[in-house]
Image (tube, rainbow, N blue to C red; front, side, top):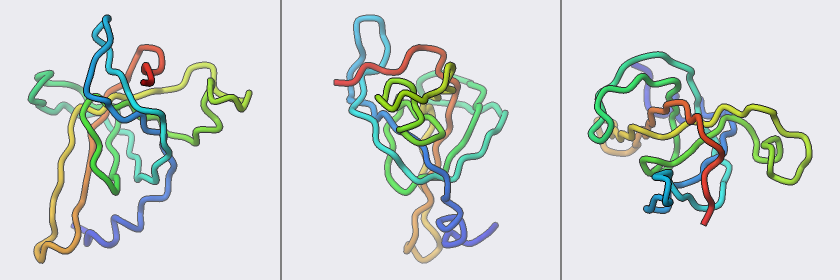
Length: 131
């Protein structure tokens, strides 16, 4: 396994995060804070994982992040200015949004570095409600 330091330097992709605000709307979808850009290491994957709240789910992607990310947050690989609805006018017709369903932290042996990883499933709804 590579050193945690090497993985930290591997974060070179931009992703947009709508962090979960802790509440759901009347339709049961998460309400989120305004989007922010993060630097991540994104890996498209197809594997089954066991989650505490949704049972067994098929991950569509995994990402290494530098900060804590709440479950039920929504993430998109790309820059915010490229996202439809950001006011830039460019955008994508069908952005691949993902919901965060797993979050884990691992410390290295000396407790100096923390590796934070998230598991993502495809989000087939409209972009989240921003509060």
